[in-house]
Length: 158
Image 1 (cartoon, rainbow, N blue to C red):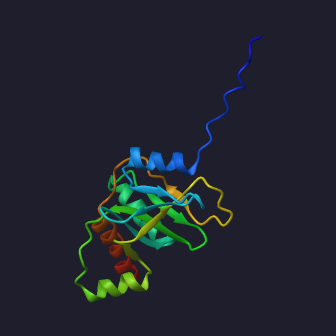
Image 2 (cartoon, one colour):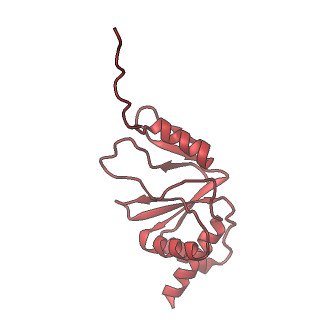
Image 3 (cartoon, rainbow, N blue to C red):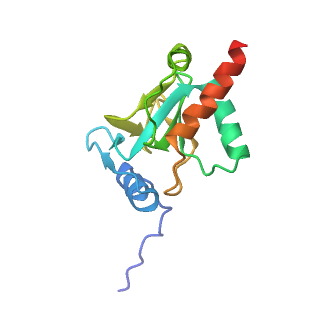
């Protein structure tokens, strides 16, 4: 008697498969929490710059207009924030006025600790999503992202 194999179903993405993609295709040092399906990576050579969505949209448009692509940007819809994954090349900012502008605008530089990435695990609260997904090993300079943000913040103060 010949057995018929069930039809091959469409590929179902899992937190583990997504983590493997991040590791192998994007060189992101990701791990999966087996209980929650949450995908994180430890900041180090790769850092992040988080800022409010409105400012982030301006920065994204300016970077793409300058040919700085592809960008990896995580959206936090409930918090109305975006996080740019960047190279960790941001030096301390010497100008107290610039430090104040960034602080008042809620721009945060993440140099240490965990960075959470979007996961295909069910997320009823829609905490994280890709605005511009990680698809390669390219990361923009964190210093350039901060400089673009500062240029917009200086313009709005005038």
